[in-house]
Length: 471
Image 1 (cartoon, rainbow, N blue to C red):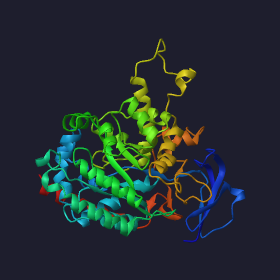
Image 2 (tube, one colour):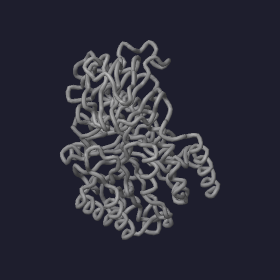
Image 3 (cartoon, rainbow, N blue to C red):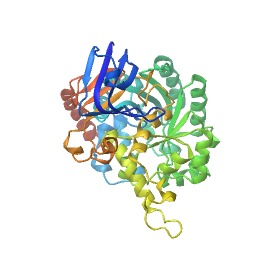
Image 4 (tube, rainbow, N blue to C red):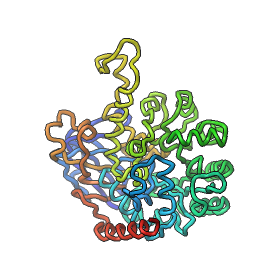
């Protein structure tokens, strides 16, 4: 892979233990691993690849902790435009179930390409519809074409409508099929070494689409093989009503009864939780992935992100499925994380006589979500959720995963009194460079690892074919 030198950045955000922000700075990497971070004069003078970042800000690569890349086949589906979660899912299940490996390839390339253009260097994909002959292998091969660091689930649905679940019976698998394929995928692909480009997660989809037995067996298998666990949880009040009616308990209590609250588990959404449940997550080490655009799009609610952070819950960020977001721009999610946390604060009744939310009041200053806190969630927060200490910050020994933004773009004009905060407060711009393991994925604002134009044309044909089959 050779060497890479990034130099002359106006600002370099390390997200290291000291949260250093360096001026006129850069980094030097060899074979995808950072050897030095500092001011430009302290770095080597040359390398195989040299990026002169005068006028740019350099940040750690963003980490996407929850996505459904196949859903890029059903963005903006008419039948799903004005629905909350359960009817939205029913409008989509059979379309996702009808996809082919070729459909999956273009969806992953489009989604990961869009992520890379927003500064994302590591993506998690929650894939769970496999009754159609598609395999996790399809996602892994496509992600490798683009060059993004990839964490993917061998997800599952086993509880069809006839057994009280939400998905149609023809969209679920038998549990023996699921568990056997989980072993195959882990054995073939999971790489736990530092710098790994592919890791496997076991991810039964949700409390309303899998059985309790499959949840328990998946947890046992994951812990035997040393892989992580993931599922949707507490996304909507409909889910809460479902578990109360069918399991006699709230979703978090149900997870705890199955051995699914622990340091190797993280949940997507976690919107509707009590203070006691937040404390339980913190005590047991469970993580959460905040998906602000999706939660707004489906009217699911606002997750208590400040409570999670204040309690010490590991918290990351995700774009969620492209059909419940219609985009895969993680920098947008960073901004919306900050704004939604402030909205939630403003919706709460003030305590005592205080009626004005002001940082001048020390009792209320800590309630504000700052730009830097939102960036932490998307970088070192995401790394913690995925159980990785080799990504998320720029420091010696870490992976050379980073992105840059042009501070001279129109979006940041007049905002450079604090360039780091400008990245979040101002409208998101396209990454100028995105580097994964020392390899340029985006250069001068364009994907350079493959020609995206024919991929997009093919993807549009695939999406139109699937939509026509399920009108």
